[in-house]
Amino acid sequence: MRILKDFKIPDFKIPKFKMPGILNIEELKIEYEKLKEKKDLINYNVKRYSTIQEMFDEVTEKFKDNICIVEKFDHKEEYTEISYSKFREDVIGFGTGLINLFEIKDKRVVIIGENTYNWYVSYMALLCGGIIAVPVDKELPANEIENIIKRSNASAIIYSPRKKEVIDKIKNNLQNVSYFVEMYSNKEIVNNDVGFNYVANIGKQLYKSGNNTLLSTKIEPDEFKVLLFTSGTTSSSKGVMLCNRNLADNIYGSLSYVTIYSKDRLFSILPLHHTYESTIGFLVPISIGASIAVCEGLKYIVQNLKETKPTVMLAVPLLVENLYKKITASIKKSKKEGIVNSMIHVTNALKAVNIDIKRKVFSEIYDNLGGNIRIIVSAAAPIDAKIGKWVEDIGITFLQGYGLTETAPIAALTPEIKPKVGSAGIAVPCSEINIMNPNENGEGEILIKSTTLMLGYYENEEATKEVIVDGWFYSGDIGYMDEEGYLYITGRCKNVIVTSNGKNIYPEELEIILAKIPYIKECMVYGMEDGDKDNLKIAVKVIVNDEYIAEHHSIPLSKKEVHDIIWNAIKMLNRTLTSYKAITHLEIKDDEFEKTTTLKIKRFAELKKDEEKKKLEKK
Image 1: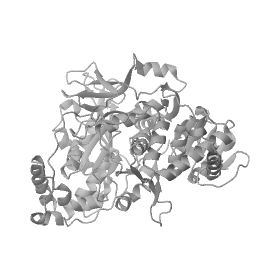
Image 2: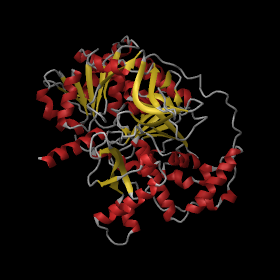
Image 3: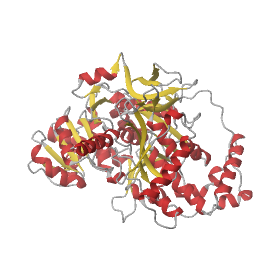
Image 4: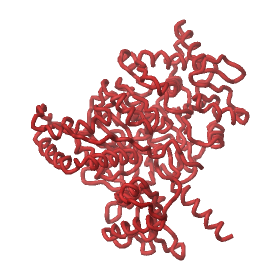
């Protein structure tokens, strides 16, 4: 396994704040509407599709003049706007070409590459044409990509030009793959190589002559049509089998709690092979005629936000945390921290009486996020409630979701009309959530029953039976629910540290607290053997925030001095914790943590390194 270098935390550049909106608050014209009384959390007006094909056919006609995808195909050029009409034409063309040229219906097709227009077209064409889509992580090393292609028994591979070198390297080992389709290529069929544009152009000609193969293909809602491989944060990856109903009900469940309009624009940051982005970041906005702005890469995030001016952003906690830290640090440097905090209190009080001037007061912060952001959704891991509260305090709706690849992915989501910062939301309308055997704090394993639940693990019936019992999916996550049904995640079953006196400690809980220490950039809490296997002490691996160290210390510090500073901060923190949760060992980590593409630390891989290191030391 290797570090996903493309997903290191980027160094966002936030300019010095002047905050004219705050200084001139007396001159602001207050414009507001009385909030309408809403009696129910659920929007019952959302259309519930049975297949993605049905959704695609309807919305691409209905919103044909709307902008669908905006992408910068060359960093030196402007963003290109692509309409729903063009998207429909390209999906039908490519899908028709695939089916008629290669007789590929019901077979498996791998898609691998960065977030780009041809990825969107490919995935939609496969979903509409009854072909089994296999999205693959582009950051995997060549041997793992080869392994997944073989495991999935793929008949064809659609790949971006950036992955050509990898595909060429493993091509001769993939005897069962009949066609290799390169995105943005015009190449005619030579042996088993062909260009994406060639296939699409053949399909368009067939469609014009009356061949409606793609949209006339009968799609069964509950038939296996998507194969996704889990990130393997705790063990080796499993293949998750999904159907159209899983995806369609994710759209229904999400839009039942959050109102997205056709005029909205979502900002695409996370990788499309991950179900969070491919379902919530792609299929959901498409279903209501909204547009999607493709980020060029994490280092361009602030620039691209300003260029595309999105209204909704899907993120993972690490990205939200980093934006928060960069913006608040810039405010502090500008010596505006006191007045900003005061105005948060003032604007909160005004909002309580239905006067909302936050967007005007904090306009400079909005400008750094493109100017139009109204919703930020964080999922994939817990986040410090303080950060979510700050996002709400400056006037942006902050929502959290919960789910897994196995639930395609949403099982719970924060209703926008009644958010609870810190909660992962409540079960979406097509799901049920229960807590198994709750302890004295109400915590137990989270069980999910949902129409979004996977069909099972690919070629692994035994593993499927282990996690799905009587229709309930045993998530492996630990959490509790409050009296209103809001879910709170506290950890993973496999990560829990059980002390010698029987106490359960959830590393994720301590990591959120440790992240508040400014000297710490990232950390991982784990149980370390203390003499014997039954006696564990709480340890933490830390990556130092070198930037903060440099800003607050005029002379370079030695490794020992840095260790001592962080250790003293941890000892102060320990005083606020229950004694059995106290951290007793600190390790400063020189290299990056191995992460999944949603920026979660691969604990299994990190702890395995420690085991291998111990074995070498014993020899």
